[in-house]
Image (tube, rainbow, N blue to C red; front, top):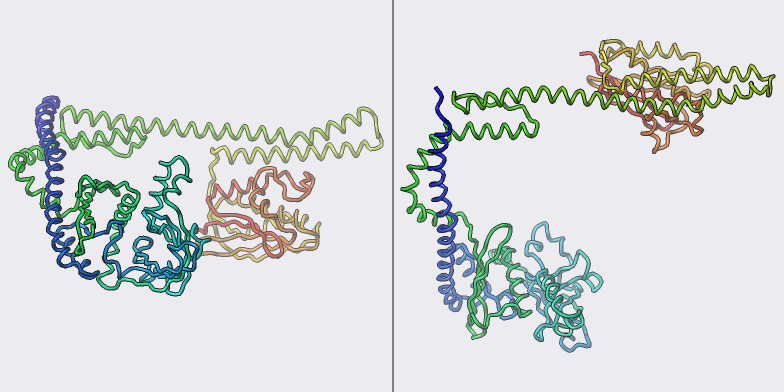
Length: 606
């Protein structure tokens, strides 16, 4: 007895889904998100206040600062560091470079020594392990060129290179955040001249006198590239005056990277010497461990109300309603994409069972009709293309012989050169024979290309076929006084004997036609596992590289003159190509040191 699907869907779908979705939506999208962000910001704020005192007490050198930063991250899962009023990391004497500047007309740079924090232009990993080759010129004693801007009376490095000519090469080093910021700021001015009046540029050269690279635990301070990039971006905003901290010494900024949200905390403090500085912290809003801990508190409010509903609804709804509906939806979507491979199992006797049965029947009928239609359309297209190509080819190739016959008849009709009457009759007879051969070849090629021809396979010995063909063409070989060299072995293959013999005739005839007199033709059989390779090599001129693929085209003749009298109908190789393709075997042509080699493969009889 059928049970009404309408009643099922109304009672369970409307009631349970609306209630559960409302609870989940309100709880997770509104309450939990706000709760998580608020709690995270609150915890980080409290941790920053404690860190400020620890920084003043224990951050007296690079090692002490690095240890404080590592401990803070391990405890609060938040990256933290300290920068000065120009945005530079404090205590970087384990990762820097000193440069002795050359004499300059600018007193700011002439014979001065500059200290460059290397984290601003290069990653620490590039100095260790197999990456040391990336910056081979950052070594003591090497020459270096630098360019940048004068900002607030102090130089700010943007790019460094081996020389001023390499400052735009890929091998240069640069502070990408400063460069990107410059492209942004320069558009605010009326023209670049006005910008550079505000921020003058400089270019200096010097010698690297000292390079310091961190070791051991100190390396980890410079491996967090996301934090370093944000610090450099903060430095760029600070130097260009886009970071306004006069109203509020404490700021929180939202940031997104790779679809992950972060909170950036900037707190203006005073260091041990009373100088202004910034605590710069960055934390992710999606760490798994923290989210798992917070969600436990969140589940306390909803676990009692939802546990019973989720268990009952999941058991009944998924087994009785959702599963067949989803299966039907997936199957019908595949049917819309013309995929009829999947059938819907009929497990109920209600309206869903009737619908599944009807969809399965519809799928079978549509599949069979579409297959028949596609086959009919494909056959019709092949036949239409064959007819068009046949008519086009015949009409093109019959123009010349018909013109010759017409000219001969006109001459004979006018009585001109009557003493050559037999000559003109012979010329017309030759043209008629050539047209007959052309039409036979065209009809045979059209048969192969129509898609309706079936290639029957049988077993035979390929060496016997080759010997039979050589006997047929012995007269043509003797006429040119050619030497035929046979390297055959009895091998039984599985193919269409008559058509393979036709391929051998075409390849060997082609070799005879283009082999100079008194030269040789080599025919061989090579076994290769489950296949056999038939090779026909003739001595003579090579085929030009651009012609190697064209020789398989219909009406293409390989000799430079392209004469019909010496080049055949131009269809032999096209017919051979179709025959071999219908056999599904490799074939081809290649130049050898002494001539040209045509070859094809056949499958051995199992």
